Length: 170
Image 1: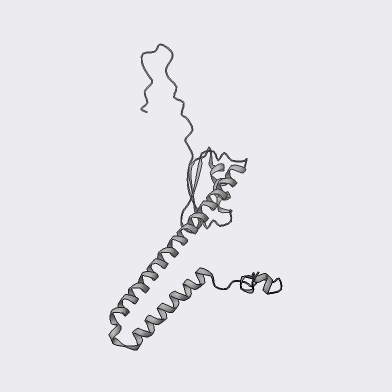
Image 2 (image 1 turned 135 degrees about the horizontal axis):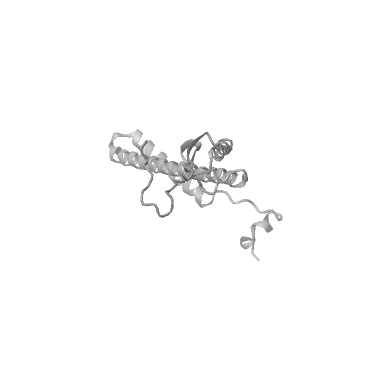
């Protein structure tokens, strides 16, 4: 094998030298160099005003794209946080055997606000559900929209075969 064709580990005594740069690093340095060159050229003379305007447009476009990406990342994080909080509260409600949580729906609004919707059999279950949600880590407040269905009414009728019904007025 000729000296030109030896591998890096053979010429360095078995040590492989790390690669420096890479495609991303070279691209970033190239962009930085172009931006620096345009900035220096714009500073150097007034005859480069068309390039300065184009450079400013590119910079504002990059800033807009960056803020859009940041907004989407923030929204995705909030959505993931809300989903996790919804699952935590829902799990706490379902695991507590003292309440019937089968008809409770949990959703999370902004900044850790938990919204409880649905129906529960009585006041004790309603209070317990709100307490469990409030005591979950990450919950800042609870909005309780839980309903307690009314007890069924029993209305007595007259004797069998009777033609007239009792008067409801007093």
